[in-house]
Length: 283
Image 1 (spheres, rainbow, N blue to C red):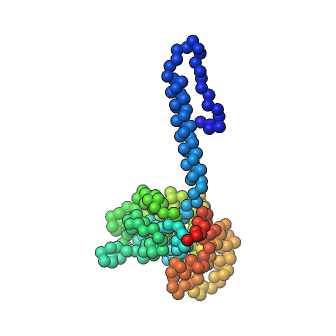
Image 2 (image 1 turned 30 degrees about the horizontal axis):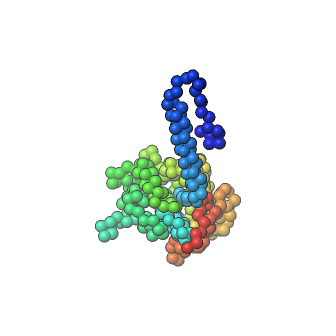
Image 3 (image 1 turned 135 degrees about the vertical axis):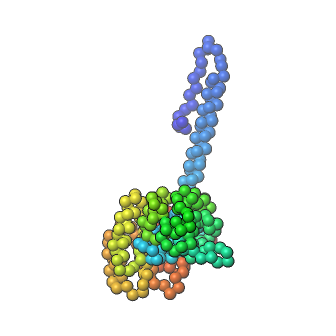
């Protein structure tokens, strides 16, 4: 119904029998107009709200600093005054502490954020064996499927202003026989942040990952150069070669840190280039 159009009522001829149809038509039009006005008001209110931030953090390989960068992002979000929560849908490698299974990556994400939910929500699949997820899951008689992950993400998103989802391993890690982390990223449909671990071979690994992200129709929102070793030869040249070839902003270069904390890493990164990154709130 067009709210700008005049309300037209068909008036019956003078000699026609008067019924309740005209009254009913007026009531229906009034209801439609009220519903349209309510929807319009809701749309205006939603447009006035700041956009929510969320992203998926992947890497060129395993052990290249995805958790460090994800935690640094969460730290920066908390500093910006928003409710931020980290999610690692699948984690392989856990140890029992005081009767509770813990994964170091998951614990770091939880410590960096300020929204704390049950571990079964932030990590729907916590596997004990430090192996490829599909292998670790098979050892426990578990099949990793997307439904619990997507449901958990919806719950986290509802409880937070910002969500950082960290992948496992590289971009194409099998989760079951027919489903991998690239499929998961595609289903979540989040902008991707790529962590490049600076070591020999990283240029090819990074560019192949960039191609795989684009092939899924996903947005590469930015990338981070993370120094996994203190004395990599030609590190500057490697970063320059990647910057020339990756059509996404370099968010920063994190050196090999003596104390690899979220706060320390965040000092070397500029996340404000990411889409929908929240502005600093006055506190």
